[in-house]
Image (cartoon, helix red, strand yellow):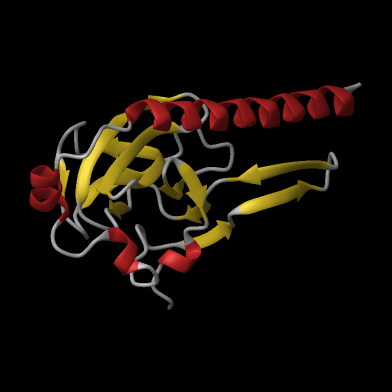
Length: 182
């Protein structure tokens, strides 16, 4: 009975995470705004996001513990899809913007905890979740390498970590090829 109850709880948690991912997709679609070319140049700088593929610094010092894409929960034989990566890091560690942009969203988001979305122009966005403290409000400009938040465990089922996504036209893409090797 205890095992069945635990399995039911864990399956419910997986379903809740899937629903949260769907809500995030819908929120990203709603947040998109038509570009203002003058504002884009002022905020995002001369180097477009797409030109930085393979050159972005890790947003936090830590180890990637979960990768982008489909994965199998062997315990319950359930396949799910992860739209980003989880980077295990110490609670309170600084999180840095991987590229210049403007904060599009900075608030609590069910299933992700404290969540920040940065618009980098040309329909590129980065998503940072499980944040302890958010240091930039919605609408604030950010520079590449600037500390925007700290690592936390809000919305996390596995302790302190950063959930990180790269999105293009609102759809998640594998962030690993965007990050600098090493």
